[in-house]
Length: 281
Image (cartoon, rainbow, N blue to C red):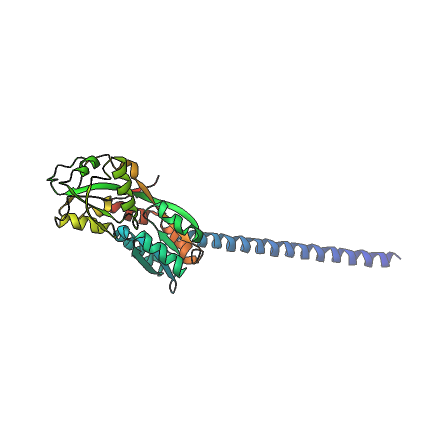
């Protein structure tokens, strides 16, 4: 009986020792697995943080964007910068607001509408996922260099000797602003309106060629030789905001998400500022 008990005790001791070894081994494996999991999660997190819009690989993808013609210079540079950083091909259409609105409605494709003002997005609001403010769009009173007609403000445009041109009020936001300013300053019926243009940049050209004395134009388009900005605060109440409206057709793609983030980054903001735009605070 004693001999039997001794064997049992020995057996139990060996079993206990084996169990401890197994448990210790299991704990070691669990700790190793936990450490490896943490390392993988840490690496994934670091990768996600590093995967910013300017480093994400979008080769083979295309982004279709509509943009108001008055913003062609800065926005083309922004689009080129994004394409260079990511490899995403940027297909940008520049036109006046009415043309873009019609194309969006008829073609029902595209990822973004960069409009001259938030009001220009409303006619296609059914196709918009969301919209973010980018920069201020500042209208100014432009005159011929040297201001030979001595124009001091909008009220002077009621003088029949001053020839004025504006953007098409039916197709461009700058044209609508001009008509509202004429009405507010009481010169709507007396302004000597020689012509309207289909895009804002054409207005500066008309003044530079000597075919008009004044125009209401976006600040960034007033950079042609022979044109200057009339120093007046008359246009301050008409400042607008340029939005980036993401369209539901392609606005949820990886490329669209990356470009939306890119528009908020310092590289894109610096380009806007280089062309005289003011950031929305």
